Length: 101
Image (cartoon, rainbow, N blue to C red):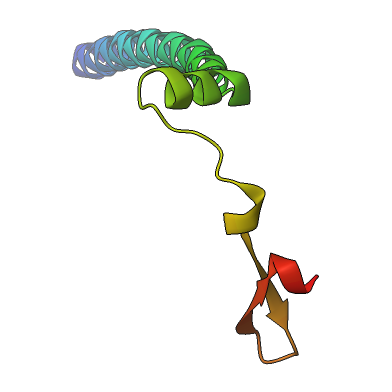
């Protein structure tokens, strides 16, 4: 009888230790999950900020201002502008002079 009691006590202790170990692992995994979710939220916010910054930098008025002021670019004369259109179903490119239009 005492051998059976000792065996049962050892089994109970082993089960208790396995429960404690599994709970500890579960808590560690949950904390890691929380950290990953927080990092995901931070990256989402940063992505939104980068998209906003990109749209600000790519505004037409800003690009045009830099082109004219810093790069000294200007719009060409209307006589020098060529219109390129796709003609036919085979997508061949034909150059059309603006004077012909």
